[in-house]
Length: 105
Image 1 (cartoon, rainbow, N blue to C red):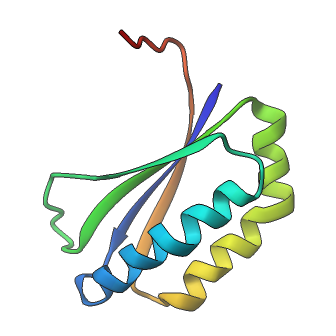
Image 2 (image 1 turned 45 degrees about the horizontal axis):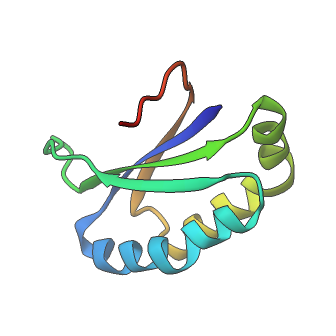
């Protein structure tokens, strides 16, 4: 299992609009690709020197082939949506994580 993690710092001037868009449009669009089993969005509780508000969004996928298919088939379009909606108002970086162990009581 892999986690595709996107860390985003969003400018406070568009924060509320962006948060609504993430919940109502972008997360459903990401899950609608069929490449991810679920998504989790969390707020980073550390203040950034550059300002803004930071979030981590974690999309769980079954394997490398599925994540690669997302990149090939959907990533450019979905990233362009964010750029079109919030130009020059956010910074994002992406990390791929491999789940080694998961324990649920």
